[in-house]
Length: 111
Image 1 (cartoon, one colour):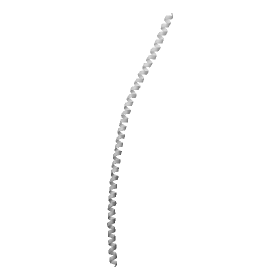
Image 2: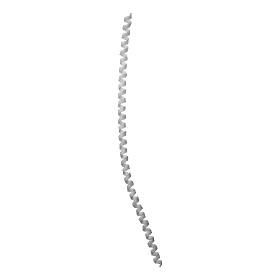
Image 3: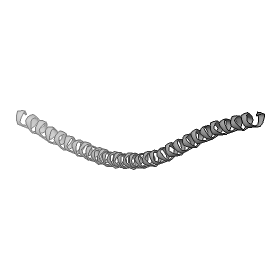
Image 4: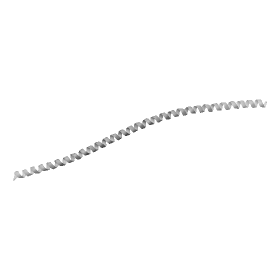
């Protein structure tokens, strides 16, 4: 009788172990599925980051171009300003000469 009960207990223990093994297999399958899902999400995030990185690089390049254009324009305006100052100085000198002549003729007319 012991052998019958012992065999029955072993059978029940074996069934419990099989249930536990099946639950573990199910958990492993679920975890593997979740891992695959996460791998796909990682790939998508990498692509999004690449796109954002390219967009940022494009924006930075655009800013560099704008800065260069503005620097060029500043140099151009500074050159124009210098030329105008030179021209203004020459005109002031000529004006002064004409004023001196006018004063000279006024004095002559007065004498």
